[in-house]
Image (cartoon, rainbow, N blue to C red; front, side, top):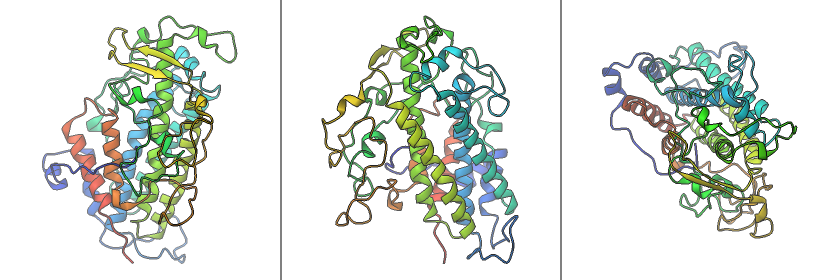
Amino acid sequence: MARFGNGFKANSSRRSFLKNGAVVAGAAAAGVGLLTGGLPAFGRDRDEDDGPPITKGDIAILTFLSALEQIEEDLWTQYSELGGTQDNEVSGKMGGNALYTAALQILDGDMAQYIHDNTDDEISHHRFLNNYLVSKGAKPIDLRPEFAILPSSKADGARHMGRLTNLTQLTIDTSFWSRYRSVTNPDFDSNAPFLQAVPSLNVKQHTAIPRTNADTAGSKISADPNNNPNSISTHLQAIAFTAGFHFAFIEQGGSSLYPVLAQKATNLEVLRILLSIGPSETMHFQTWQDKAGNALPITDTDNVPGGTGATVTFSTLSAALGETDPESLNGDTLQANLIMPEPSHFIDPALEPVSIIRPTSTKFGGAVASFQSFVDDGLFIGQKKRFFDLMFDLANEADNARRQL
């Protein structure tokens, strides 16, 4: 869910997809059109005013978000199995991968707990949205029965099961970094010149998790409580630092997506859901961009067996201190500790800049652009065509929702 780009329309319609016989996911998509009138709010005092009833557009928005949250649940579960706190709540006490966990702790000593909690949050978002859909007479959505076909990591700590997402061939757009450190707002210019924090992550393919134990070879657990980087191979550090920037990339998109779709919601309770879940995505993003900024200056080429051959270079972003102007209109500020949103133009450039989430304009889409950014990220390399058809259909229906007053 990176900055919104050009929209992409699926070639096949929802109707044609259902004719092709998708099982669980297709039935969920069909549920978007079930509600022709409002239903009383579930678990609430019916005397409380919800305003207009729930519309088909509201259901379309919630269905797409539930599907996207399940995608996030899938990728975060993989991160948590290998690098998160191990318990029965999230990753099934698999034991984790101690070397990968140690590499992540170079970014912050609490990374394992943060990864665990982010995973727990995404699981809760998907389950809640599905439960809410059912409470309104609509179908829940479950992508796993048909589309959990991608392979797991073979490194120690990973469960051997089908996945929805691929974390081993990523091309990560890190322009979110300078976008939030600039007065420029992509709401006014979708092609604004925002610098990449890590330019080499935005070319070729990079893994954010150890694929096999070959990726952790040469590393050891340090007796140093701060996990002395000298005990972790440069290659494994590069994988962990790639993950750190990918965490922020994933979560910054939700920060924009929820307020964009909230502008299309009709029912007040649906609006309340969007305004309540969205800020938690922003809390995630704030955490991850702070931690990613602690990456050490290293260069690594992925030449291990099964590697992609890509080279990545991480620089000391704090070295940008004083080199660029935080008020810059050029999107060229990279200073690591500027983790609060720099005031930017909003509504009208003639108004004073204000600190906000951006972009939030509906003219650049929202759902389609967000899913397209996941596609561009390489998150679904190896997926079925029907997966893309379904997700773009759901995204288009969410974007086509209009507030009815």
